[in-house]
Amino acid sequence: MTQSDLFTWSMEQDPNLRSTIVTVLVLDREPDWDRLVRMIDRGTRAVPRFRHRLVAAPWGLTPPRWMPDPDFDLSWHVRHLALPAPADLSAAIEFARTEVMSAFDPARPLWRFTVLGGLEGGGSALVLKVHHSLTDGVGGIEIAGEILDFTREGTEHGQVSDTAGSGGGVLGDIVAWNWSAGADMVRSGLAAIPQLARRAVTNPVGAVRDGAILAESLLKLARPITRTLSPLMTQRGLGRQLTVLDVPLASLQRGAHAAGCTVNDAFLASVLIGLRIYHRRHGHQVEHLRVAMPISLRRPGDPIGGNRITLARFAVPVEITAAVELMRALDTTVERWRREPAIPLSNAVAATFNRLPVGLLTPMFKHVDFIASDVPGSPVELYIAGAKVERIYPFGPTTGTALNITLISHVGTCYIGINSDTAAVPDPAQLTDCLAAGFHAVAALDPGEVEQPAPAEQHSPT
Image (cartoon, rainbow, N blue to C red):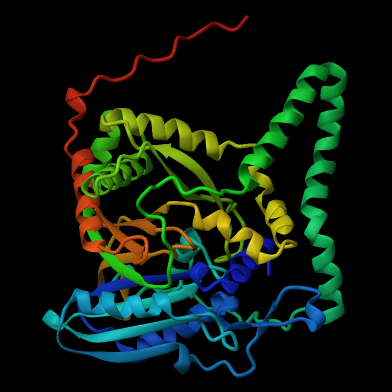
């Protein structure tokens, strides 16, 4: 396991921090079963990790390592169930809720696909359940590309070879892991030595300043969080409730354009407006909330799948009532975090965390108010085994927070999945109504009526 994968897996010693991703695909018909099984079988060969299980190392000298499952049985991972009639989307979401709350069998690969037949109108749903250590959101889209088609008749995906190797020896793994625990930091430091040496000679004041900035950035990324900013969503438990929203992509784009910001800014602003409304309905005023936002570390050439993100945890303003000004403030805050000097060292930071008892780390997440994630989807129609994908609802793990709200775009619509901890949010339907009001507030913005900020003053180089 990578350092980030291990961090995700070890957190599960606290059941409240389970890192299970569940996605519901609503289909216009039932997929052809034999064809579906063939496509998923191919997908597990294209991404061999889906045929691997975690095997504990002797004496706990390394984390569990990925090894081919000698008893791999595709039929255990791919199931076909019939929902009792009359079945609608809520029945599929309720099934997904039980998947969110149930742990994986650690003796098998950490994923499961379930086809739910019997939806009204002859439709069906495909419920995908994977552990976060297998993939992040962007990696999940890459994996989907191995089993989804662009036409109902099918798309040629090409042949794949079975690359599920047996891995290295146990002793080699122990040496390699313990070496790698600090190697990322060492490599980063060695790579920086020539540049730092030049800086120290040519600009010693700047070199000291840059070192101090990096140290401060590492502290910001890894600092413990001991206080929940929300005065309302403070409790944590094991119950989960799933709700959904559909928002036209064009409305978010229009709102973002009005502020000169990105769709992600419009998404986050909508969520914060909704959370402000929710707090006020319960008699609370809130100025700031703390969000955990995934920042992708994925680079060109990285293998498909894998957990290549870091979670940046930072406070965001809630009291800014003007949606345009809120988006602009968020744009500044998010961009500053994306450019934090410590972000490329996230794997090394995870290696440090992995050396600490889990009990010391769990409060870092339980005092975060919510997770917000924006995953780019497909602008064109997709099919799976002859069935058309009509809607996609992603449900990310709460990981100790009050709720996870994840957006994925698909053919002009943003499909939003809300995974709420019922101890923190006992009235998820009301929360969803408040969030819908937040999205409506951003969608109602007219770019022609919003004053755009003046362009920055340009200076000629000297």
